[in-house]
Amino acid sequence: MNYVPSGCGLFAMLRKDHAHKIPGKYIVSGITEVKHRGSDRGAGYAMFNLNDNNYYIRAFSNKDIKKDLEMLGINVIKSYKINLNGIKDRCYDVSINNNMMSLEMINNELWNDKSRIYSYGRLNVMKGVGYPEDIARLYKIEELSADMWLAHTRQPTNSPGNLPFWSHPFSSFNVAIVHNGDISSFGSNARYVESLGIKSLVGTDSEVVSYLFNDLVNKNGVLNAVRILSGASMDLKRSYKNAMLDGPYSMAIGYDSGDDLYLIAMVDKHKFRPLYIGEDDDYYYAASEISQITEISKNALIWPLPAGSYFIASMHRGIISGIKGNINVSFNGEYDIDASGIPYNEINNEIKRLNKNSVSIINVHGHKYIGMGLRNLNIKIYGNPGNCLANVNDNNNIEVFGNVLDDCGDAMSSGNIFIHGSAGDSLGQAMSGGSIYVKNSTQARTGIQMRSYLNVPYIVIGDTFGDYLGEYMAGGRIIVLGNKHTGRFIGTGMLSGKIYINGRINHENIGIKNDDKRLLMALKTLKKFDKNIKINDYIKNDDNLNIEYRKLNNEELKEVSMHVKVYDEHFKTSYINKIKNRFTIISGKH
Image (spheres, rainbow, N blue to C red):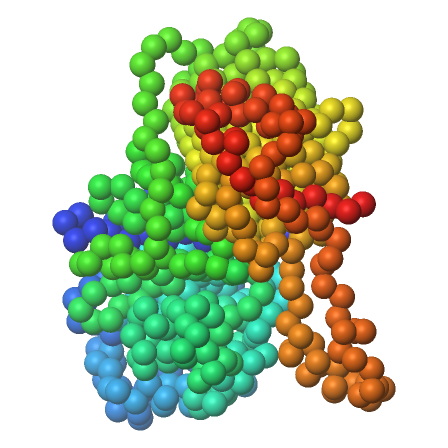
């Protein structure tokens, strides 16, 4: 078959204290929803049950390692095996001792024979080579239930996929991880793990993270372990610099502390990989795409995890760390399409079949590509549409009573989009015309590569914005009416156009500033570095931006007020009274 790299897919669920155990069919349904993100090169599941006094050791090995385990003082209660493609998956129920490093010594020997202990502890990992549904059938996942589940579908990037060693989840004692992305800090992270005495690694960054977290959580507790991994702990940064993660990633971690279960979700500081958090009356969720959650819970609150952030919830304590945000969507009245029974990519065909100029759609939960290939229509959407809403929008007027996910309005040239909630990453990417109005917040890279063509495009934001607002902007206008300025690196690489932000912005958050000390240290390692040349001759900060803090002039007032009036009319707000405030105005010098 042809493999089309699209990034791995992950899914995780944790039950709340009062809820029943999570049926295996839910986790299978959720990960199968993003089958397109992976391939037949690997998938797997991890199940956690609190107060399960059993310990499990699982190994991929054609040799029975029962005697090896007993020589280490591990009492094997029972064992069974599953035949995989060319290798056996052996599971041992054991009475375990505290000498976990002995298992790593066995792994050093087993790996020479292409065998490996891949899971040990109170959790149970089941993985192999195939699609998620293949592995689910093999291990009869739908017949199982658990307090917490993790699942993964794999698109190999930097390691093989012909044997199950490289499939996710990866585990280290009572920790399991599923991951999407590439950890560029793998080298330093692996050296940290090797310093713990762990020498046998299969060579994937995900495996290293599982060992890292297991060590960090035992030494520092859950919250500090997460803060160290994400680079958020400045006080522990020096001590654990080789344990911090870098590079594009999203991940979910499951951890059994013995008295509680923890679900942890993390994204990198630039959010190069998507991750969504969900919550309903019974469960917490972490997912690569919103449709995974809505496939199980139509009424779940769902929100994107902001760049560089993390989410922590436990079965007993609830949400420990992480923001929560969504809006409830309700509808009473006549409608044209009920999306609840329609596949995620079939909404546009339903709209075409109606042959109407105005269409109302209800129960939209993660449906993608709505509006693409359509023109001159008025579309009202009740719910939370998925990725790529109104891409290449051709004079459609689209109103969303809910949140929208990533890549909304990409390359649109005309028409209007009104969003009564918040928007995900890359809103209005490369748009060259039309207008987008967002009542609440937007995530990273809003207006990236925005440009003017026949008309000037506009994006109006009512609340906060993520990092890299207006990155590589080459025309158009972005107007931010809120004054809770959260984003950094505003206008990075901006060539032309204007960004209006209500209130004063710290200049440190505009563009990218060079770290003079680190750059000087790097330059001094060069053989031909001339110590007589001043550092300023080497450093070129982003000085291609005009930055002003002032009231709008008459021409700007006329331009901005026209779009703020439209905003107020649709969202029933009164921002028009604030446009005489002082704004930070950013524009390119080109």
